[in-house]
Image (cartoon, rainbow, N blue to C red; front, side, top):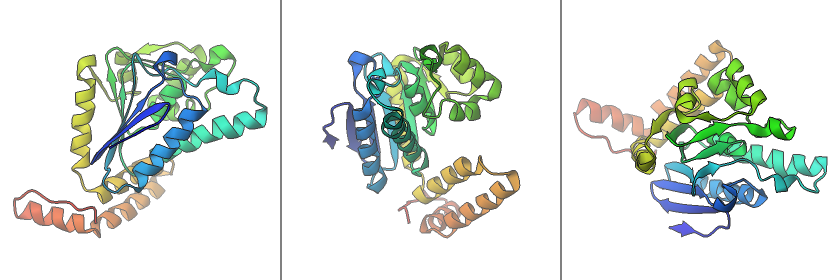
Length: 262
């Protein structure tokens, strides 16, 4: 099932959804319409129990080359805060906190707001042709959708400062070496690699997946003792599920488990 949008292509082939940023004439720069459409798509993915995993990628030679600077033209301080920064932050938080895995298939330039979208995903696979950076400093700006905070958590304080303060681009291999992406593949294998991973994740029990994502994402913000206690809570939620009973029985009986998301 495909749904028509102006700035993205949204495809649903349960159990996988695919979002393609689709403004190739401006290297998929994120504008207000794209933010609105992404928000709408995320609502649909969240409520559709048949969708277990989502892939997000870009059309052409870019994943996303940043926020569309035209969003800032003629806007007041309050307009920029509400319509650009806060809306963007809500959209990426929705992606990050949904409890369904998001895979970023990074096909080319992944800069500024595009890099921030990628960092809100759970797993990032990059084409060997992809390049990364936070060039906001060159416009007299700082990143506003997580390019200081998620970046620091992924690559460490020193490297995040270097990337943010210089505005320089790095290639896919360096991005993997510093922990910004998780895998680098030949360009022609990117789509297949993302789909194979999505299929694998979609086969896992959804309650345990959600609990695991919560434990990792939320636990990272807690002191260790508190995070370990939270992990226990998430374990017990998964343990109480029918899927856990099925998984344990299947293991004992030496058969393949059939998970139902209950």
